[in-house]
Image 1: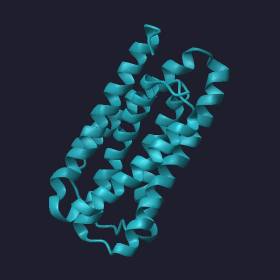
Image 2 (image 1 turned 135 degrees about the horizontal axis):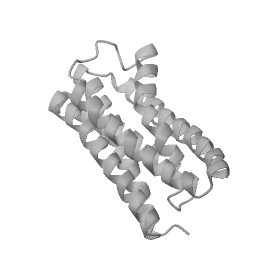
Image 3 (image 1 turned 90 degrees about the horizontal axis):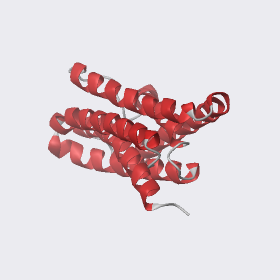
Image 4 (image 1 turned 30 degrees about the vertical axis):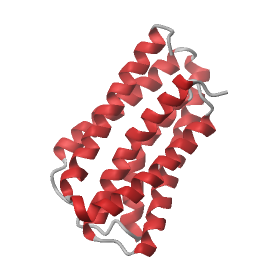
Length: 189
């Protein structure tokens, strides 16, 4: 049974990750995407997010066996660090990509870049008290939804949302990591 608190934790993480996916999708949408490519992009982004979460969870499981209780703190610290990194990248990355992010190498690189934060998050999902399959399903669903929304709204909303979405996602992840560390320390989460 999944507790309400656990479901809320997963939702916060999934939405935070989805904002990064949304930002890249808006950027692709601004340039225009053929309707036939939208599903391919959504599946590629969601697959990259889930695969990196799985890799992170495997690393987290190994760390858990080696470090015991401390591994949970390390996982949540990684979540906080990923959020801070996203904030720095959002502030620093003023230049626009000239690579076609809708297909080929551009799609591969975009999928990889948005999923690197999922590696750290995958490390922490073992310690939030919900089944891993539930976390992965939530991340995949939010990634597909964020991609669809980003592509649809990209043409209308332009780069303003693209820039702010990554920053907001970073702030949410950093705050989430800090709150999860506090809850674990207080044995409340």
